[in-house]
Amino acid sequence: MNAVCTPSSGCRHKAVLATPGIDQNSGIVAWDIRLEQTADCYSATGICGENFDFSSGDAIVGIAPNSWGLGFYPGSHVSNSPNRIQANSRLNQGQVVRSIYDSDEGTLVQKVDGVERARYTGINLEVAYIILTVCELSNGGYTLVPVEDVDE
Figure 1 (tube, rainbow, N blue to C red):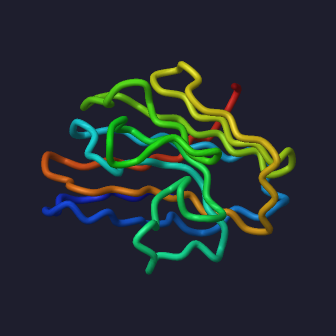
Figure 2: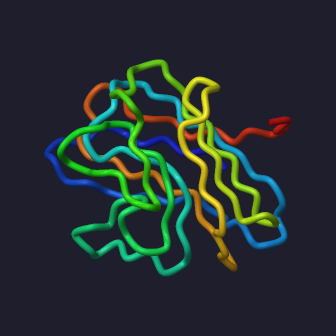
């Protein structure tokens, strides 16, 4: 799994999935999102179920049903919700968001530069997908990188 979101323009949030999906028996799966630019307004990463509604105006990680995640840009665009926590400050180029999903335990832990920022429990998905929501990518985007050995 390796994906790169490339520059676009205009304030229109988009969600992309990494494939293949993570089934209930996958154990622990982790990935990093490396910011190649300062965070844009709807940016977030997390997980979603198979029925994530890409056509909805609210197709935003942690806001759309059946999704959980960490937002990279606090402010007026997206608020905290039970399934979305906003980073306490706008993330900058060079920062790393690590997500650790335990499909057996139904948990998702998210860290920014090693500091825990979000923890979700009670996630029960037959198949989960790593999801990244972006808005205006202009200076390099974000890079999704799998983490092979998770000891956290």
